[in-house]
Length: 544
Image 1 (cartoon, rainbow, N blue to C red):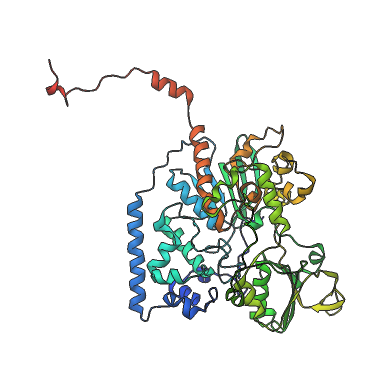
Image 2 (cartoon, one colour; image 1 turned 180 degrees about the vertical axis):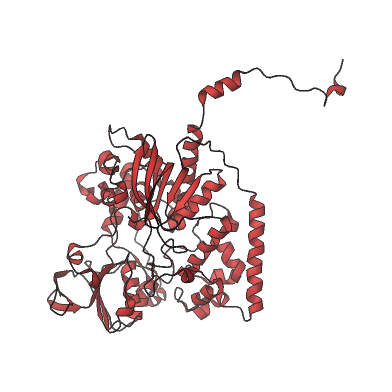
């Protein structure tokens, strides 16, 4: 089950104490990062710790005062209007307490949907990826993208960050430092009163009429609960798991990991490390190993070059060449209307996915620079590892081109797959879920086995029944993880998909509202003659 990421960092096991984030120390740590082409002293001067404890206390007091104003201006949470249903323990269960689960939970609360429970298999304070397996120094997305605030600017990252550090500090940011984003999410959960049931794992989903029976493990103890709606906010690894090459999976577990797991950095000093893959996760993993003192790190890419985001300093100094003709427009969605990508025709959504799937993963320039700065980092382009075996000394031997190489450890930065049949919790129901291969037939030039395995989702991220299966209960399962990438044109579960939280909230509220209508009771109410009220409040003004 991958309803949440692993619960430890690359550097040390997670503990309740480690989960407690000190806001000022996090921001102080952010000041050591390189931001864009600027070093932290130049770009993050406003983020550093105030000169004295009094200044720190003042900014924290200012944040707390602003938080109280936010809650007052927003008004109290609406009362729960959802009518109770016999046999249902919950109206909604959200699996995953990371940024998506927290944001959707907050949206439902503000919509007046009660009976919502958020569960996560992680230990308290460790939900999400940002404090465990995420290894980038900065988020890979622009700092101005919408977050979990659902349109309430006072709850946005910018409002939180500027209250603590001032507008100049925000302007100086290229992108948001990863630990600072984690700290913001922690503040958001506290401010919105988002509660998460930790150490709770979804084992299996079983249909029970049009409701869902959830088989859970809570602190290892089996338990069953029922819900009317289920949201799978399970991130990138919750739609089929990590994509691991067979030759890596065949190695003993102690000599390799996928980037979804913990890299044992404490054992890598003086060791030779191989990184398979050339995306952002690959370069960040390589940098982590190098920073831990690895003797050498070799990165292997099947492509002849590395695709990256940003402009190298030497290129920035040269004038850009003028294109011979304007580029043709491509309908891939636009930053300000990402939530409309679902409305594109199937043929466009499919081709956009295939184009992305066949293209090279683009690496932020700062992630590239972070690894390349080490002289003992080497990139092997247009190269795949072959003849991979474990030698007599317990090292990984492999052939790369004409060279025979040996490594002490292998990191598979090979991405994720979408295959609902690989998710144990969906074992009873996955065969009834409509896939893109059931609904769309591409032309030969755009065939894609990977695309065909994506579920064909409804307007609110809900599963749809396959063919004549009659499995209408599937419409009560909302799939807000990587499996929604083809239907919605964005990496669902990542920061860009937060713009779609209101879509999920609206769909759930709509279904619960319509379902709660008692037609017979409604008819009795409107057909009942109304008795006149006491006329005394206006009697003296009545003309007789």
